[in-house]
Length: 225
Image 1 (cartoon, rainbow, N blue to C red):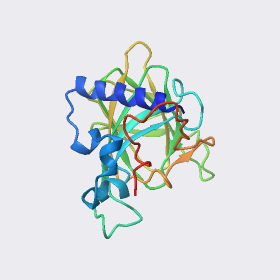
Image 2 (cartoon, one colour; image 1 turned 30 degrees about the vertical axis):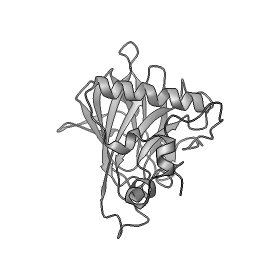
Image 3 (tube, rainbow, N blue to C red; image 1 turned 60 degrees about the vertical axis):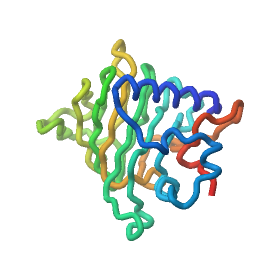
Image 4 (cartoon, rainbow, N blue to C red; image 1 turned 90 degrees about the horizontal axis):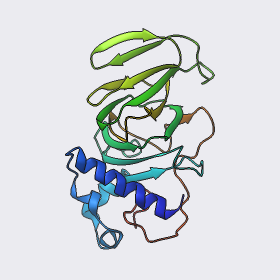
């Protein structure tokens, strides 16, 4: 990805967050220059990869594959005694035409919540023992309602609605055509993006950045030591 794409995605997400009247903690607005002078008091942000995350999953085409995200709180599976939170919270931002690739998590259970904007379409499958797509029916849990749908069912989340996704449940995201960009919430168990994503097809979780302009915000894997 080009840095200009990353910068634009973050600015677009900030605008959507403001439209949805969602307020952010101070570290989300720190500039790269500010991060150079920040000491140990923000070590939790760095250790737990809180902050901005923009990726095209190695596709080279952010307009069709990718999202912008912001991790607001998280524990740390590598340092559970130091960071005792067992939960995480994120915001995700997707624009029309974008897709989050098919994947599941071995350990993490998560709720995906439509916080505002357009409608989200989530396609769900169970995973086989070989970690492929199962043809078996899928149990859907949405806002206290539990029901069964065929494999590959598309669940529509309008603003305010949510779905619970259990480990070994394959899922991908798209925005419903004609409904506009969408701000999503994710409330989950402790998040480990480096080791707990099983993509159906090979995908890179974090993108290589081509520096065609200065960074507007640092990404969660770019903080200085």
